[in-house]
Image 1 (cartoon, rainbow, N blue to C red):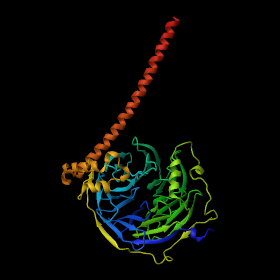
Image 2: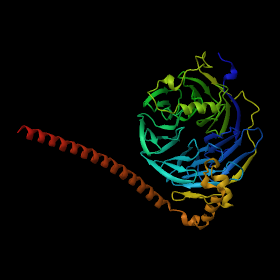
Image 3: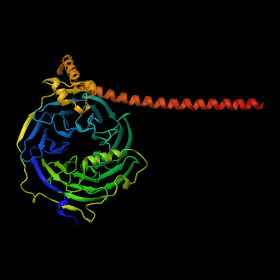
Image 4: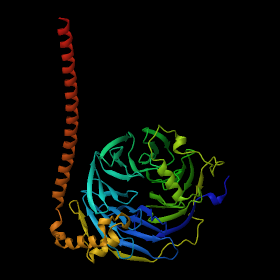
Length: 478
């Protein structure tokens, strides 16, 4: 039996939300934690003891998803109010609002380079946004029911999405086509994500199951039935060796993917658990659910250098020969080799002296709105400062986007119509979305017809050539 120091422990829990927690995400540095809730607020917690927490006010309905950008300079959120917001994660509360979906938005996800944002909605679509210009790029339509989640692959070449139509779809972000499809006859996936090296996806099933699919050979690799309720969320450890799951049965479970078994059951919550996420280095993870508490856990297993793991995963992104499970999860010395049974950890009565109520500061957002036809962000204060300092990722600025050129662009923005002039009635937006969807279908149909016509022409050409040969042979014989 391994020592107790290797087992996960509950370090702290945060109280501040007034309703269920729907989403949690660590900042890239691991020093802050962002949470979303049914109470319509986002909260930003500092992992240092006694530090203030910030409550971001702006959404008008349940906040369903939250995520830090890869550089930590932006915070994206999705809501049932049909909007997506980008926030500056500090006490100033500046935010930018995106309006393109016609139904509640269920998830947000940044690409690994921070250039794109994917949003999934109950309007059956996935939308991709350009973060450099903060504008809408394109929609993906193939799902026939609400889309619950959409995630980029580590290299950004693919998107995976899951829907209540009981399918999981893989999309090519270059040609914007659905390139793969996994279907389930029993339940649908509440959540789906790529493993760190981008070769597999994990799905959290409403049918109480967790499944690992290999997208290179299109096969189900592992199938776990360890929960007694629907699985709402999963999170891969950066090593790719572990997967943590959150379920409506009130527990978190940690799966060892090398050994293919359950190793921990964590019982810190007093109701269904909706969300869980590892920190970027894997040394911490956080969870939240209907008890409105945010729990902060320390893993204490599989110590690793996160940067080394990222480099190693980048080397494994090439799609070569069909892999074996041992290739995807190479066997290494395992700290839990001797454990046969799972370990149950229930810290509710054992952990004391946890900080529960840090000082909370309300932050009211100063909005700017971005719709599908908006190419720039309008804000209330000094525009050149905000664009160069806040809303644009400094690492993405090219030589043509120097501070001088940015100032020129923001001066040109004064000629843009006002917010009220640019707003589009909801009914018109619905009609435009429907027209866009029909145009996409027509485009695909025309493309298929062109391919068939080309094939027919080729076959006709072959037939004519064969007839000419036969005619020449007959003529030669006569």
